[in-house]
Length: 552
Image (cartoon, rainbow, N blue to C red; front, side, top):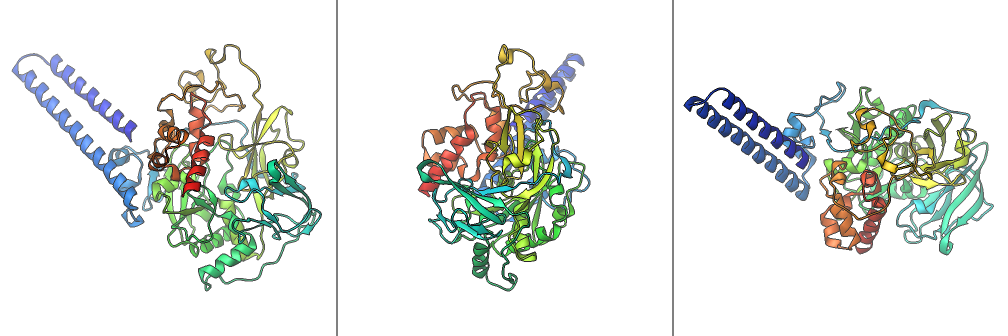
């Protein structure tokens, strides 16, 4: 908002100067003096009017956020980020956007265009044989969960593997049938992975039929806990596995991903429309509020009908650069969370898995995963299961072996070794060049392959240029200076840099006041990308979230 206001005031100031110059060129005397005076008065009135409207918009937004205004208070005229003038000059939207539903135009952010986007087709030749469920993927659970099966046991897909000692009602289940070949442990004997060698022919634990439409919520919760579906629900704040005792205020699902090389969820949902809708129907029984769908209003191609024609949900359109597709950003603009106002989030494929529990009466952990990155011979989509082994997915598809594997995207994903496994919630494996080389003279030489928000690079003159990603940081950690870069790429009413500093000094009240409960790592990943001080912003944020969770 501040940037929009500054630009508008500058424009009005330029108009004022231009008017003065024209009046001076028009001649001298009383006539020209009157014209100049009236012009100055007119411009002053315009500036005053602008400031009044802008300040009023900001105050109304703050007040609405504080009192938790209901969705009945939403309207298209105020949904766009940027206030009254932001709506006045908002970009043209695609024809398919239903503007009878709220549309949010986000003006801050940054798209990183990389080479190696997955082709929209399933590569059936890729078949993983080993899978793992990894307790470290789940924030807040006991580092040594209680095992239900031992090494060497035979399991079916959907059989219980372990449960959380802190919350024993929450159970994790096998994504595939096969033999438990390892219970891997790390520091202090913490379990890092339960590994399963998959059968060639998959077998599933058959679930009992359940009429959720006529059952009460507690019975539905018990059924989902036993089926292993509860781990699909993530709770904000803190991004933890949902608390069984908490009824979420609302549930949010983003139907598009704006991260670099992210999978196209319109392609992913193809063929699973019925299961997706069934999952949405189930979610409506679990919340006291609404199920919100975030829809993509950025492209010429219309979102899949499974999203635009979904029933029993409230739809919201989003237009803008990354991170517009982040569910946290969408929550912030629709109905923000706080320590006392908890919500759940799911991905599209988690909703499909939830739906299949009722349409097929089994826990189907199938995932359509995007294999992306310039270091792959053939970037494509593969159909696999949760927690597939990395080496199985990329076998025979690498251009060279000097690469880094990332479970997720290059901004917020986790580094993986070849013998590691995809994380539970990830549907993307990115392979990029390992950047362990040093460029002569560093940033002093012009570079056409350095993605950056700075206009000092020659690549800035080619806005749609794609880059070959590598892992060099192009700098080193230094003093935490104030640049305004964080705010420029964060389409939320928070101050990321001040928040990070409050976390570092342990100021609990300031952390909460600056919006920490609304954020998770992916929401500040761009801040880390643009940081001239090379601060581990996501790590700092998690430190703050863990501190607040322990104190809450």
